[in-house]
Amino acid sequence: MTPPRSETAADKGTPRRRSVLLCAAMAGLTVLGACAGNQGVVYNKNFTAGYSPDSLAAMRTPLLVETFGAPAAGVSQAAVTASTVDGLRASGPRWARIGYSGNPGDAPNPPFRLRFAYGAEKGFSRQDFCKTDREPGNLSTDGSSGRTVVALCRGERFVSIAEGSPGLGADISSERFSNFVGAIGRQVMPRENPVLDDECQFRFCG
Image (cartoon, rainbow, N blue to C red; front, side, top):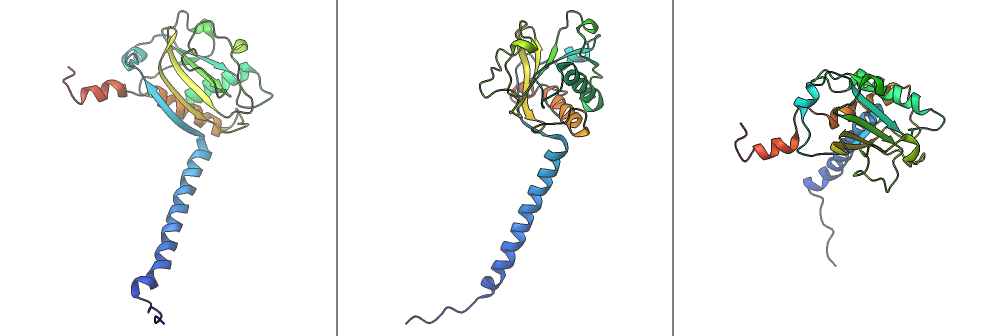
């Protein structure tokens, strides 16, 4: 019969190390959860070469904000737009001093439009989101979906787009919702175009 293996110093330390690693992992998840809980979460973002921070900074009229759907039941489209504009004004990108308005009369013939689709369905078409014939009443959304798609439109195409979620049943009057709007606004309208920056790493861009 094989004699029982004697416990080594490494064996004695293993449970403690595992415990420490587990605690560290749980702490990390807690921090991430707290951040997501405070302002929702941004899943992804994408840019085209047409995204021009300089053009945004040169705007002399407010950036027109248009919303579709709602992050929660029982709120009007006008209220969703107003809360979205407030969130952008409170914590949106600061670098260009962009003004925001949900009133088309404040931005006649706008060079850009910033569109928010709350409750975007699984089959939501990002490519068609900037079509000029899109209206809140003819864009289908899902009230049970927490997905939000945000696009910076130029003409009928997006030059940048991002997805995220403020959480299911978000209170549009809450600080959490306002923080989410500001966060996704900053992601979709950064100071520099990441696509062009990546290209400039490999060639001279004067």
